[in-house]
Image 1 (cartoon, rainbow, N blue to C red):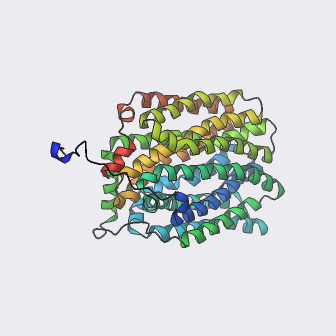
Image 2: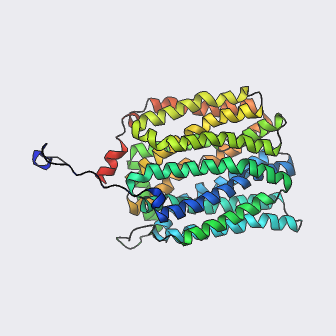
Length: 426
């Protein structure tokens, strides 16, 4: 579009200030969404530390614990694309409620089976797969609905608050999960099931519409999936960010399993392992709090490149950690970068994607971004089982270094226009 001189405001004309946005804390629908996910995140963190501990206790095999991580992430490879198209058709709020109800049932089946003495590795694998499948639908629906619940100008702040919530939940849940696992191995799973039910209740009270009216009748599923694929593939920067996020998730797919095995070699108890997770979560909290501010003060490219460089430098220091608490401090520096990266890239792509395509495009993005998690989780378990922690850390460290160098040299990232310009054009 060309701009003529007549279309520009005269210098002496008063410019109206932008309307003042309502605080997120006064947005009832956002607060209901946020509070439900806060409780659910705490429950997920509690069971998240208990899951690998339970499998390691039953089998003593790190590879089998890694397979469980892979099974939880594998559904993104299988269901992501159809889930995105279906979520753009279906009622997103109803999808989220059904998914959390299903996850409550799945997690609740573990203590029930344990009570009757029939809990085995096969059921744990099935629960991991079911939970991962429902997570795909819930996660895509949640990402698609956020721009409907808050204004686009507040997406960085809302994303930062969500990231902070996840980190605070980890801070609370990791030591609590380790502690109550030590008291009773089933309590973490009971707690997670209850947390999903709490999320169902909070979602039920949200009044906002999670999507706009469709302008046309639904077409064949394959056609709608291709539309989402085509849109993302034509957006070169978003496409690159999907693969870049996938490379980072490939590393993080089994990162906490590395922490657990390292800590166990140091003689750490389940409670101490939980404390390590809390120390790491402090970095995540700080990153979440400062993410929106950094997004405003620095360019997109500067933030993305800086986070990758820091992670590439700090990641191999885990090999040198003399005790569990130094290990946690190193992890905290790594996890400081994640929320900053996520605030910037999520708010950027959410502002770009049209509402009618939110589900489909987010599903394609997350297929590429999350599809590497099961590979990373499985490879982590195999490397830990057949080699050692040093080899495992160095292998994944190479991925971080390569991602940082390639991104540093990529003009798409360096020269990306600011988010404010995108919000103004939309």
